[in-house]
Length: 100
Length: 227
Image 1 (cartoon, each protein chain N blue to C red):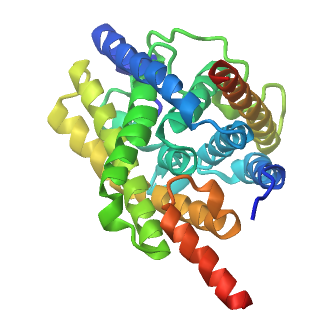
Image 2 (image 1 turned 90 degrees about the horizontal axis):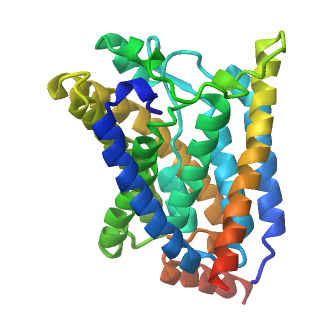
């Protein structure tokens, strides 16, 4: 019962792309739990202070320069899946190399 | 619950950054041991799936949403220390590219979500596993409970850090964070249980936390059916 890993990874990757590209535009735009608490308890304005890194190329998961918000979100999601897969794969190769 | 820089003071950032880098550094050493041939692409795709799933905010109450965390899912699939590596990669990319969570607060975010939500909750689960997990159904039930707990615990630490920073009294921010995240945690439990259940049906060998004796039973059942 020795299976190859490739087919599983491919299916999971396709699912991730589908979620990030086609489902993410339907995500709730409302503040998340922490943002809601920060608004209710009056410290949300602190989020704008002391922002150390201000050069994020795709802020708020909207790819800049695209008129349609849905498309901008989907593109941002697609790019994120590629980069995250690549980065984590790279980390795993480094870890494995160090082990061997 | 990605904390922006402004929600934490310098001492809390420094302390959480030290804790997080110590834990992740130790974890990367341990992760080398968890890393087989299969885990290289598996780490990649787990991180990619968690990134995608974290984008999908679901409504939980009027004007509030929650989203998937995935730390316990990663720990169940990969083992606790590789899961810490996966979540740290996701948080780093979200901060760097999407301005989600602060650079100076990255240590706190890694500590809350990857270390508390992933590693610590996983070890609580692992300690209780011999009592709790005696069948596939009980395994999935445990996955549901501990994935819920991972979100609640991470949110509690997030609240404590904001309180220690002096930006909101602990008796205000802690109950507020807990009451929202006990609801968001239900979403976490549903998603995690569905995903683990699906992987368990297709490839039980890839669910690292699934006890070996249950896998053997599954195989023997299969063999008996064939005979």
